[in-house]
Length: 589
Picture (spheres, helix red, strand yellow):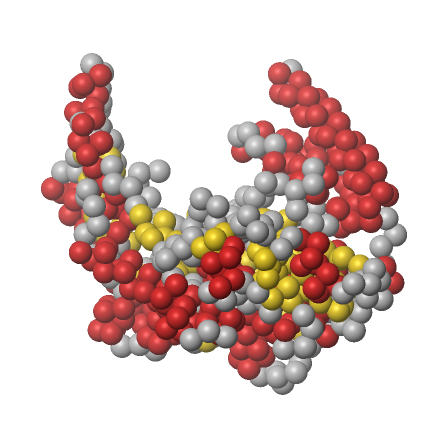
């Protein structure tokens, strides 16, 4: 009876939520976007882009957020829209606003590349910023802005070109005070994720690792800004780290072109006449024809890698469930219409076994005759690199965090901590290592020997597969591995990736790998299919696995409303025992 009651409550809750969504989306669509067709693109349009908005990995977003006025973009759709706008005679310019972007370094390079291609069409690309700093670093923001042909800065704003820093917390002292002992092991010295528990500051290897990455990023920024602004790279290097610059100082240093307000910046791209209309890049993308051509499967793996299915929700991109991605790869192989596979990876790593599952399916896809090209996002490290290294080709941005070929595991021992609290534990076990993962005792010598054997095996497996996949001798691969991260530019120089670039370059590489002509039209097909709205409702409800399954059954009864909901959604637009390969770090401009 209680179970029936929960199901009835779920029915009423979901029904009410869907009703609210349908009414809200209907009103919003009727007022703002009802009846949109390609003819709605103005004869003279300026495509606008809010670089402060959230950028998602997946195209399908949150219709409820759209109703609340929260703008978000799918990165790939923005790139495709900017490229289409460059060739569209109805589009007379590109206008962007920027304050503090949430884009990662590599994704920022993706936008910069697209803006550069747009400018090559001869159309103006203007950026307006109220400020690029105001208490923050602003360095990455300015690097992004420098791709535009003209930069406007509000008189009260500043350019926070303060440089780059890396910082990590170290809590060993806190653990010591609490009586908690960290027992972690890694392969090898550059696998620094465990250092926050075992050290009080950067080790020599950790400092060397981050220093190399920061040097590469700083050089890329200096070169990009110099090219975008037409300044000598030595001048830019002299300015990097000297900010923040007041508006007049930025103007004198040729970091910006004009000091003024948004209306004046808009006039600079749209002209004095009133016939040029503002068209948000997401709205423009919605008017583009669905691409036709050779079908290529698009499979995305974003976030920490784990076993099982990917999780979905309104408030975040899909995470990286190995079962979901592996099934998508198998389905793409079995689909006779699919010519090749484009695998987009943006992950800091995760479970070794889950990563190995996906690696195997990538290898099987190649053996089945389907070319596989990996396009790396902001980070493809550790497990994120593991899943990529069997592909025919790997493409990364110069700023993509790449590599971290290594592994770690361990636990926090709470034995002394419990004594301080007056808590006592008792236990019974059968088997010498039955309690090895208990937080109430340290690893025994026998247990530690098994840990070392596991880590050695995983590291040997990781490096051997990387060596085979990349055609790099084992001794050389070990030098490049050892838990070390590289920028995409360094990874290209060392043979860990094949080419530099983003979506645009990855498609060119894919055509080559699949034996297609350079001008072959490509139609990207999502695998697995995008989630339906009612499915997102079921996932977003959370709860236990059993409760989610119950709610999923309830939600499926609403499938009759799916066509309307789908149409309105389009109109809305814009465990201690685990062996981990994830590498958390805060490095940024």
